[in-house]
Length: 229
Image 1: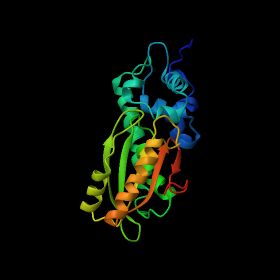
Image 2 (image 1 turned 30 degrees about the vertical axis):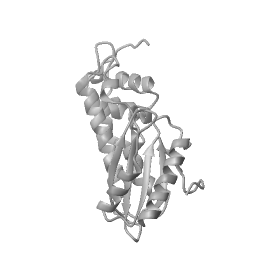
Image 3 (image 1 turned 90 degrees about the vertical axis):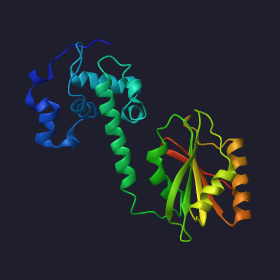
Image 4 (image 1 turned 45 degrees about the vertical axis):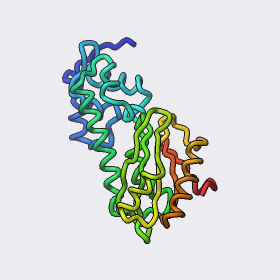
C-alpha cells in the first residue's frame, strides 16, 4: 500500500480532525478521523489519518478492530505499544459504558435483557468464558460469577460448582451463558448436554435453570427458546 504523506498540520484547518471536531462536533468525523485523535501521531511513511485508515483496513473496520488486543495492533507499521494500549483502553471504556447504561435495568426476564448487559462483556473475547447469573424470585439479577475460562473452542464447566455458587449466593434461579469466539451461536452437543445436566441438578436442589445463552459477536442463541429447556 502506497501513501503520499501529507502532514496533518499542513492541511486546511477544516480538514484537521481536532479542529474539525471543535468546530462541528464529533458526529461529523469519520472513524479514521476519530482514531487519529486518539493516536495523535502517524509514522515516517504515513500521517496519522492515513495510519488510522490503514489500521481500519487491516482489521476490517471499527467493529473488528475493537475485538483485537493491543499486541495484535502493534503488529501494524506505525502502531507502537503506547498507541495500541490507548486504543484498547478506549474500546474497553466503551464496553463498560455500554454495560453500565443498563445497570438500572437488572431484570433478567428475557434473553434480550441478559444479552444487553452481558453482550459487551463477552462478545469480543477470544477464549470461551462461562458465567452464571444469580436471580431473585422476581427474576432480577442479584449478582454473577465467572465459573471457568477455556480455549478458543471450549471451556470445562462442572455443574456441581455452578450449583455451589448458586447456593452460596442465595439464588432462587439462575441463567448461565458463555461465548463462542468462532462467531457461530449454534449449540454444540456438549452445550446441550451441559444444559440438561444443569437443569436436572437445579431441579433436585430447587434452583431453576431459567436459560442457557450463547453469545457470539452481536448475535446470540437461547437454548430455552430453542427447546432444550
